[in-house]
Length: 267
Figure 1 (cartoon, one colour):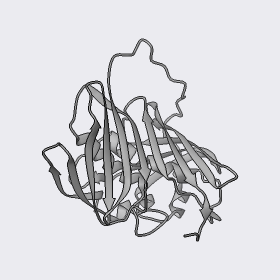
Figure 2: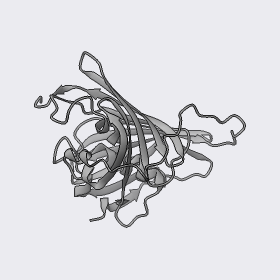
Figure 3: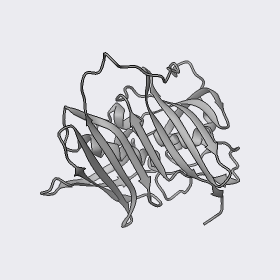
């Protein structure tokens, strides 16, 4: 299998609500539990649905906020997508990912009117170069799970707590469907939480994220995602992973992941 997911069927009701049924493959397997999906490809398949949902040429996605409500079980699931705030210049779209009869992820996405702002355009985030000449980071595969073993990682600047890591993969998000740069790169952003862990790999504390929030000041291009990431732990069991997101042409956005720190074997 050369994809993270297989589409079973997609339906559109009279109100324009789209329900798409999928089957996850081994490549979508998570790192914390063998029977769950990794949040990275789960984000990617939600973005694949968003990309196809009521497309318009005059708006684009500016923010995606994904709340993780529970374990993202592997196997069959469905994504239900609808407009919850319609508008000519901005609209808010909600996507629910339901696994084993429970809502696992609620994603809310702002699509925003585009216009010519070249006269005032400017970025403070700086380019981090490109990954072609960087060494492969084999140690990322010390993490378990099919998803982590599906990606290639490159780095020469990382330590516990901060670093720059480039990621790519050769898989389609959905079997038999072309994968856009937007879907491919969004489908790797959640990996940021594991690339500069503020612990050695034999963790005393696990640190799953409760949400993933992505802001895009331009749409990404190409096949490589650059993560310029900082991970910080507070003293009361809460942490934060923050990243500037890059493609081979430069920075294009930012992501945040709030973390719950807990003993590895806690329920």
